[in-house]
Length: 295
Image (cartoon, rainbow, N blue to C red; front, side, top):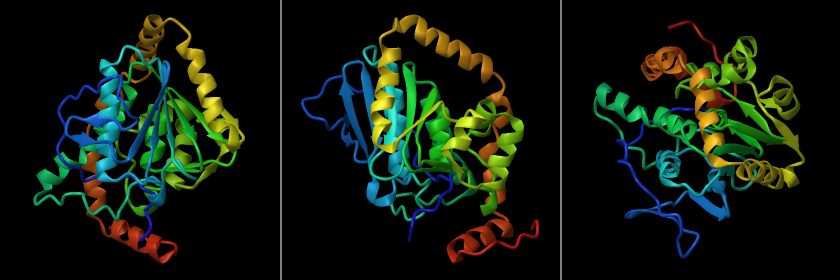
């Protein structure tokens, strides 16, 4: 069963604060007793590249991968050496969204448990947005659902000229969650955000550049080189004012986000309890247009 292109999470409880040492004798990083199984982390001077590394699953956002992304994002709070962080995907695609085939995802027994578990997604996005160094999403192939949310949590986005980004939740009967709707609105404005989120269709690189979702597009073969060039440009500047400006700009532009989106996971639980949601999922798997009634 293929990974479905949508953002939904039923994760384990939040991991405590974790500090990752800056230097390891190998390229495999560790979180105490836990390994990064689904991330590849490579350091080149002041620039760190974090690669989602489940190419056989189109880098689908499993429960474990979401935990690892949150953990690595938090690790940069203890890292005074990294000046810029690049996020990208191994293989053909950045990420196809959440993985419905994830067998490691725990199944909560109550609605309260489900709500608490569902908050990993928003925590992950907030952790990404609060990384102190400059962050760049290098988008290869498809970035759908939760992957689009990850991209909007970064400071900048470079896309391969054949990349496509989508928020396919609404056609599946769900709201866009993970506190990510404001991030989309900040980038492309209210009218285009409504179009992109409501229609749920894949937008191509040229459209995304014209709208301001992408800062730059380059040939696919040059994507990582372009991302590294941008990262090095910011990494060469004095880090203290760079990080202070970043924090201030985010505070100005995102001042109301949390108060507006504090209940988006509750809204997700509501939409997932509807017949329209069940019809949307059936239609997706059966490759047909859904028939929605508002029930």
